[in-house]
Length: 87
Image (cartoon, rainbow, N blue to C red; front, side, top):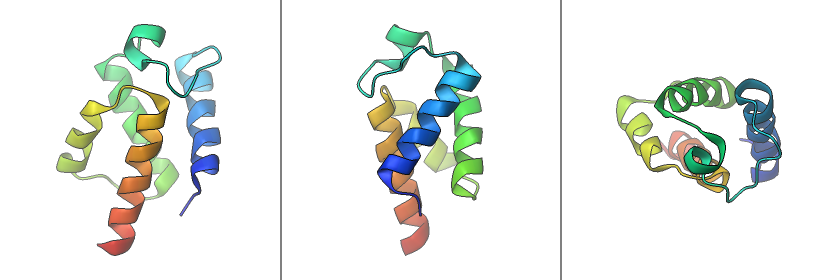
């Protein structure tokens, strides 16, 4: 299981490389500040699945719809990892 710092580095790298974010802040609103849309969210979820090494269920993906910031992404991924370990 990745630490929050490891996750942060990977997620920020993906946002910069794949989604062309410039200097994303952890509390930026992804949609308002970076033009992140639902298509981007689906692509990001696929990247997260690769990162954590397992597929997310439909229900788990639906939980991602409340994500607004990078901090939210980190909380979400940590929760999904913990659920998998405890599942």
